[in-house]
Length: 188
Image (cartoon, rainbow, N blue to C red; front, side, top):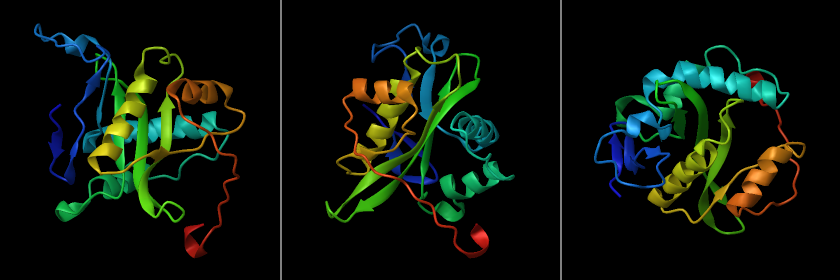
């Protein structure tokens, strides 16, 4: 499978994933199917809207203003620097973005190795069941492989039964932990 390069990304991006389960498309009709692809700079305003919907779904405070710009600095840093995080989007045939996943490398002391942390996975209500969720996870797993990482980790709220069933169907295993946040100085 050939990887797609992004000028801001020293590691090849996984190719777009469409809903055809890997079948060839000699007629060029893939645009009639939803797909998952690496985010582009121009996608970030829509990703910021999806992130706000995600926060509302998880009963969290909305992201602060300027999220698209802040994401741009991390996902597409100037001067060809390596991005700190990666984002893939779920796109409908007409070009509407209906979901996203973000991930970034992290380090496990117990394993003495890096893993890919999937920070967010979200699909807008009404767009589940189109295989976009598994395609988003597949794109994150492909990113982990491209970075030479052995696994992906993430968390979900304990009340999110639908997500838990989805992750269980994927074959993921859960670990019980609480996640804490500690504000630091002016960044609070």
